[in-house]
Amino acid sequence: MCSRLVNNSQLKSRMMQTPLFISLLAAFIALGMALECEQCIGPTSRCSGPMMQCTQEQDTCVSQALSVSLSGLEQNVFEKGCGSSKLCGKGPQIINTGPFGTTVIETHCCVGAACKTTWPPTPRRNTTLNGRQCSACPPDGAECKFPPIKCAGEETKCFEISGTTTIAGQTANTVLKGCANELACQAIETGTKTFGNVIQEVKSAKCTDGAASTIPGSLGLLFPALSGLLLVKFLA
Image (tube, rainbow, N blue to C red):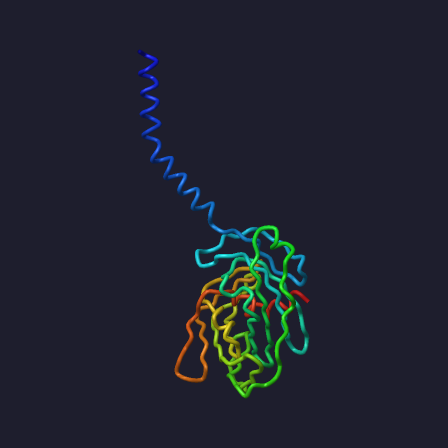
């Protein structure tokens, strides 16, 4: 009888603990399902780095190849991280700031071990002028008093980004204007991204087509395009 009471008591205790256990299990599963991707950026495809937890909007791991042209010099940059599947395999994202540099990004989705070995090809930009012009502004926050730049290829949009860039504890205002293609405009997003000792905060971002309409920022990875113009100096 004593043994049965003990067993009943244990059973009741287990039954009382069951809802808590299920709740904890659900929370654990939810955390376990949160996507994690390796984060790195470097001058070669051999870059490696720590795992980062993705946001709800970032539904895949991505590998990116960037071609950054600045002051007549071209630098390839490779990056891994979290991203949006909406941008994967859709073609290059193009940011053209004229004399202040051009960045072309090719994005591929990847899962698991494939993220360590699969990279998109180094992207190339169509340099044939298309008759479009956009305002230009340097990325260092200097006053924008420059003639419009000529857009090329798929660059049918004008973009404008403002925020701050912090490198090794030193913060400077960032204002960037120029030509962009449609896919780059889809990638524009506000917020803060960190790579090593570089912190990029985008406070406002928009694309226009020369008319009254404005394309608001949406999900994507514009940080490499913006930071690429700055990081190329450190990766050379």
